[in-house]
Length: 200
Image (cartoon, rainbow, N blue to C red; front, side, top):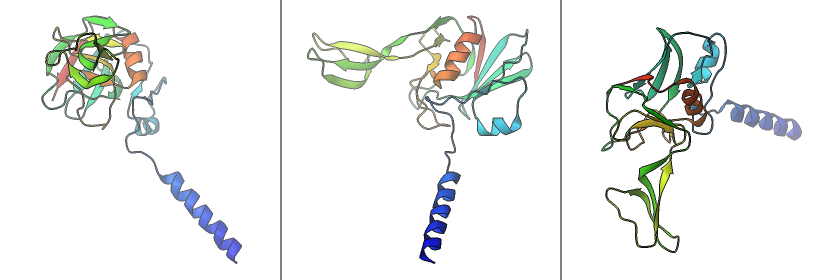
């Protein structure tokens, strides 16, 4: 009797643990891109960020929605994908408007935000802004990595790989952060001149 009760308890615990899952599936580590000829509504529900590789002669265009922190990708009038993003937090808002990708750099580092170290190599300022903080004599500034950089404004707003710590909420210094694999795919598919619209 005790043995049967023991195995029943184990089975219930295993079942409960298998039912637990994260609400937000997209992260910097797991981009959850779906590559398929046709969209599957089942797969879309399980993968917030996805991309369809259906062939189209229409130019790619991108809409960034600040309200739902999502990028939407279109070819002509057809939606071909979407992605979680993290845009500018309070005090560093991402500007709405119409833009074009004007520059692409695979391995870029920020010239504004990063870390400042002293001459001995000790970290002095973890969230440094070169406009407000100075590098001590003999020290150095190391800009934050921004892989797959796609510039939108002359003032330094662009799209790139970056953490999305709280999906659905702004988190950046103004740029549009994307999960790594989605940023890499977008970098490959979006040439300089691609239209990007940022809306509320």
